Amino acid sequence: MSKITRKFHETNDFNKIILERQSVKVYDPEVKISREEMTEMLAKASRAPSAINMQPWRFLVIDSAEGKEKLAPLASFNQTQALTSSAVIAVFYDANNIEYIDEIFGKAVELGYMPQDIMDMQLQQAKPYYENMAASDLRDMNLIDSGLISMQLMLVARAHGYDTNPMAGYEKDQIAEAFGLDKDRFQPVMLISIGKAAKEGYPSYRLPVETITTWA
Image (cartoon, rainbow, N blue to C red; front, top):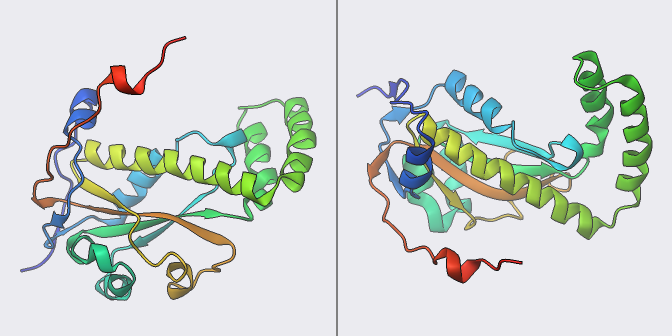
């Protein structure tokens, strides 16, 4: 049987997106997401916020049979998701993302989002701030930003009618190099499987707001 490439039922119902999202472990392997739709979902997810809009996240979309076979031994605890999903998105952050600061701010001026004098002022502050930041602080900031876009991507996928599962069980020290990326520059954050559930995820208990919240 040929793989199915089509859009599933989309929804703009925010409560449905939030409350019905579950982590799915087993997908219909016959369902394939087109690269056009995947690009659309990544573009929507990329509207996530980041520190001074630096957008440090980078995506490796593994959607071919060859790519999944290469990934499987690196994700030994999550091979079912890796092999049955439409794709696995490896989320990285770019440790050298400062290289894009002029493009990001320059385009903001060009598009009328920011006046030139504000750009000049912010660049004068941001460049030395990044250059003098401790490596551990930069890593923490990039991980926070990458976590924001990862969650947004899973919600966007749900809005497109797909299911996802975030995964931390994989060989983080090997994945970049295995796919031809600079392992010193591109730092792994998580894997996200995406596709159409063949087996629904399980509901899970959430601690009550009274337990997790302090009011001041």
